[in-house]
Length: 163
Image (tube, rainbow, N blue to C red):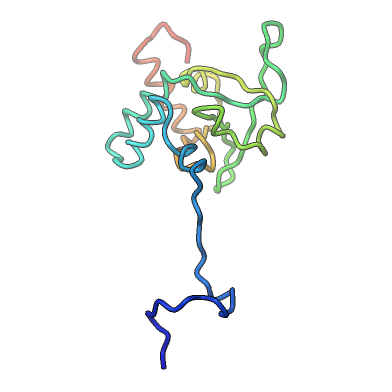
C-alpha cells in the first residue's frame, strides 16, 4: 500500500523526511511591510521592473541610513561607511531605508548610524557601488559604473552642482 498523497499524520516518521517549513511570525510580517514612501516605491519597482527609473528617483530624494565605524559629528565629518562585497567581489556601501532594516551583525561592525539623502550617497562614492537593504526582500544594488551614470545625470539636471 502506498502512502503517497495521503493525509496521514507525520507522527512516527523519520523527521528528516518531513518537509522543510518556514514559519512566518507576525513580527516578520510587520518588519517586511514597507514603512516609508521610498520603501513603497521600492516594493512596486521590484514587482514592475519598468518602474526602476521611478525607484532611483525616489532613492535620490529619500532619507536613508548608512553605518560608520566612527561617530560623525560637527567636528568629525569623516565617515567610515560599512563596506560589503557583492557576489562578484566588488565593494558596495551598505545603505538602509530605515533603522529597522539594519541587521544587528552590521551594527556590531560599524555602530554609528548616519542619516543622509540618497543623492548625498551617490555624490560621495568614487569607484564603489551601493546596496540598499542588503539581505532584505526590499533590496537592490547599483554597481560603481551605475553610480557614475547617476552622477552624470545629476550634473545634467543641475550643472552648477558638484557630483
